[in-house]
Length: 343
Ligand SMILES: Cc1ncc(C[n+]2csc(CCOP(=O)(O)OP(=O)(O)O)c2C)c(N)n1
Ligand SMILES: [Mg+2]
Image (cartoon, rainbow, N blue to C red):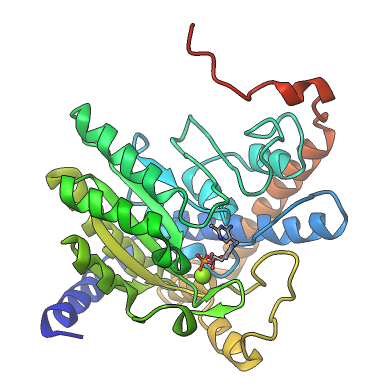
């Protein structure tokens, strides 16, 4: 790492440290992360019971990325992500009911149950999906960045992606255009070390993948994705640059998924040593924040238990809501295929 980059990282770390004293903010962050965790634990259960069908990729272990990043946005900003989208959808403020009903394939889901796990969408929160094609959504993010600039707005778009995305052609085209045209995009690589069962080192010629930003003349940075404060700091800088100067950023956030790639593979898998998983689980983002708050006297055991019970009840409510929501009739298959642009 060059001196400039080391300096940049240190700046991020120290500024992040100064933010850690706000108990109200910390409680909000904890709440957001714990909601995602409790929600997805029940998703795994519902999947095993056959209530959720199709693909289902859990976000467990990565919650500090969604919560940290999206806590730096305004409501009128935009968010787009991959199929690993339940966590970001909840962190953006989509209701657990709309997300769970979508997972259950029911008509009160955000996409009327037609999209399922990989396709959370919500116009109220400017959450633009939930995309199943690896790399396919990155050009959309660039397009949204272009639209913002064309209309003279000061919003930004945050685009999450896995680290495997950086080896797709769409990534290069989209980042080149964003860099060339100076679009207000914050590209966040959630580097959880694996693309399905393939380790980053077996797939990418370089391993500090934020360096790829150099090819697009883009500011770039790397931060610890298990530390919600570090994510907030790094994303905050990128968002400000995008909003005020319309300069895009490539940010690599180092994280880890605690579950398998999707519900179809085992928790650990044969592609990664159990000891590695255990080592990363010691840096559970929720435990890190919770411990920080407890040590700072910002959270008692009773408060934590109360919060946890409240969130479990919210998730149970979303499950009950999803179960009671009807399935669409078969004829509805032909609806929502084309947009009516005549009205
Ligand atoms: C174009 C394309 N190729 C292959 C796949 C199959 N596929 C689904 S997820 C995935 C791995 C992606 O890994 P990464 O980008 O690191 O994201 P993560 O799953 O780790 O969040 C692959 C290869 C796909 N969905 N799209
Ligand atoms: Mg990955």
